[in-house]
Length: 100
Image (cartoon, one colour):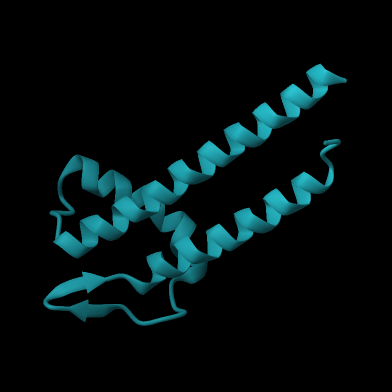
């Protein structure tokens, strides 16, 4: 039983780390857009292409804004908040099944 508990906690830890990497990836896109990174470069275009898929459900919730001449993508901020809420709910549900 102790082994099963250890596997379960390792599973939760891995899922948590993957979630934080995902959030960091979205934050990287937000930062690149804010700083006006050249979208023609390989790394920046790769980040934009890969993140377009995950921010698509949040694309037209709020309009993008300009703050002191810098673009702030509200769809990315909405995606970060939305996925954080979804992850919180998933972790709460997963903790219901823990035996501790």
